[in-house]
Image (cartoon, rainbow over all chains, first blue to last red; front, top):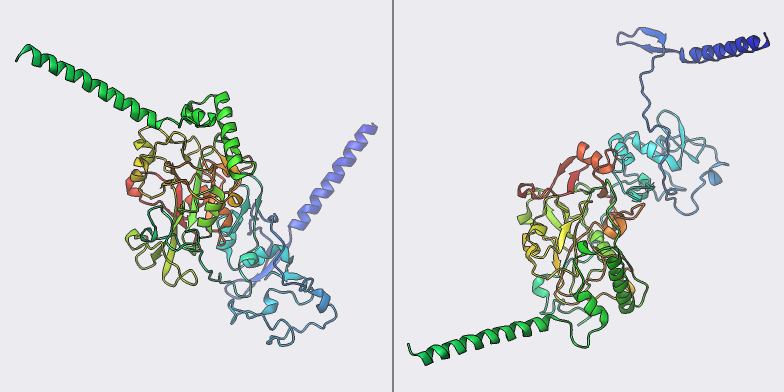
Length: 204
Length: 308
């Protein structure tokens, strides 16, 4: 008899929990259709979560300039100024060469909590997950980066892998990869002597 | 013909045979190690082909080489003979839309693989190509040396051993000193190679290089982590080539090749072609891929691709 009571009680608890999840899933959404009429309907799951969503990638620490982070060290006592302007007192060394006509600081940096970056959705993310911020526009690169095609991946080919943040190779404010001095070319055959040693090299 | 002259002729024939025999013996003796050579030189002389060594013989050979190299370079040199990993076929990817031709890979390879510094041997050659002409090797330039790369209007294509699945180089070797391993890497037994250089003539990629002299390899720059079929110091008169850093990639877990690790733009990709979830399969399935000189049916396992 006692056993029977316990069983029905646990069933009841299970039903309540199930009902609660149903209730939370059955949210409504409102939007205007193409004729301008307001539509209120049950929210449907349009966006399928990717298998890797929510997973973080093993990345090195972000390449901050020395002493710049945490930003709140200075910004905590300042009144945030959301007005679009040219910075003169601080950060004036940053020249934005990254679709500068269409964006400014606070499109990526967060106004209230300066130690965080801000996605378009309003979600705040730490600097260590900045790849999600970049991936908002550069989705194709983000997709390739996750599987190790875009960007450099080190570690072991059949073991643990180490990723690099986008910002480790590209300056986020001026992302074009900077030109490098090439290492010396091979010696031309006509500049070799009979021993195969380059003429005029320091070993002769 | 008189009896005497016939007899004379016979005598001459006999003596000619003797002369030839003597000559052959003399020439043969020249190939032997010098009379005052060390025991290890004699051992090396009678060493079998790498693929015919049994376990004990291989152990002895490796020990002999280790002691030889340790003495020569004044540090503890290890010579491994790690076997291929089961179920692995190595493949390499190179993103032509990323490579900027900085030649970091060339010198990382030289440092890792103990190439001769003088005369200079590079396993990787970076070609500068014209964007308007495309992959047209007749317009390739590999002695480019501007202040900064990439140069406007050009792109860069590093060429190294393509680790062909159908390698022309191994077929022409008269002594079977070079062959393809089970993981797809084409290797050379430097102790078996006779230096005829047929393989160099057969290779359509210029990937094989010859040791004309005992190359200069500074002691302090010598990499002591070596593999018998890979980066151990090479004797004079043998052919060498890229082995996908066999001494790194066959480890468990396997490190990336040195050229892959150094690349500042991440243009180089490496992995197991038999792993359907690996990066190599992803890039072959999803990117524009080509192999160099496809028409020769060498079936390279080195894939050039464009990520964008």
